Length: 428
Image 1: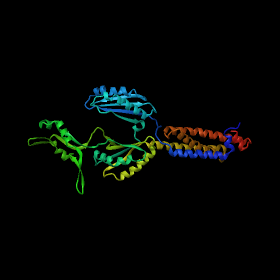
Image 2: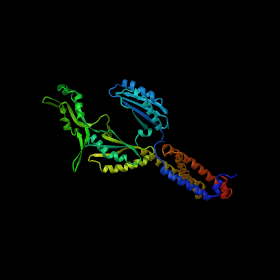
Image 3: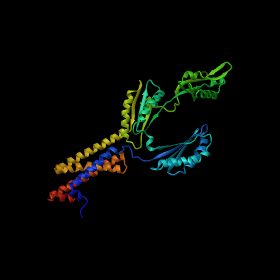
Image 4: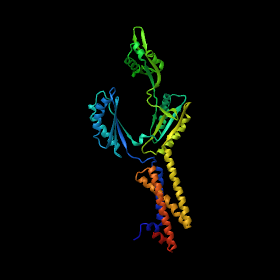
């Protein structure tokens, strides 16, 4: 009974064609496989956030968190639940089972939340449901923007208007998230002693601010040659306008905002602060799409950043603070270097022991074709190029080298015994 390999021994052209097909399939797989740091896994979590303004942590737990937990726990695909009840806020995170359909879980959890929506206090806001994957927890790159001249709110405003839209539009980018942002806001710091002396309550200040922050389209007017859109505008635009805002008018006396508060153009909140190398900065995290090649995405980000840096305002500096793809690139370079060293050592060893250049050609051809074919199989089974698959490639090199040396040595032995090249190849 002839072996399967006899077909290729007797038909060398067929063997060459099969090898060429393997090479073509492997090369296209190399350029199409997704490159990641770790293997992709569908490990997602669904977060349900409910705001209950004015309620204590105990009330939030009793009236919001507990009923929602009981309803959400009945959904399929949940590994475990974790919740947090704080002043005015309930947060419930449902960790899904590994590789469970996140879209299906999101729909079912949303249905469970709707079932108990009527049992929640009417003052509570509608629960917000959000889904996050394990890949979206860490960015592939962090960009730092710092300045000795500009304030953080000015840097944030520039990033939101100019930089963020440009980076978000790059192919393969899921989102460009600003970290440590300071959004412009008019800060009104009330003075309790002044409020008491002038008999003004904080509610009156809030009412006056709300009444002077109103925009409405009231219609339009037409003439014989012109049409004008009309807008009712009561908003305030500068610090001085806010300071001169009348809080109360009694008789001939006016109480303005500057009399009872300090007014300054600042930020919405000061809860977070980001620093890079000890200097206050604003970060931007780049999150690639789950099916995107992180290395290619960050290359495009770096190319776009080079253009952004040329257009930055005076005093604003931008740099790549962290790049997760550097580790992946180094790992790939190490694998390529290992393969090259292995191939060189095998060639030298075989030539020294067998003394034949013809024998050297066998491992030189067999090793690359085997590795390229293995990469094609990675594509067939849906694998990605990551640290684990690269480690598997490095380990498989030893097996390929060992098999190639054994085959070459066995062929040489049969040739020395007087067998023909055809019989030698077919008898292995």
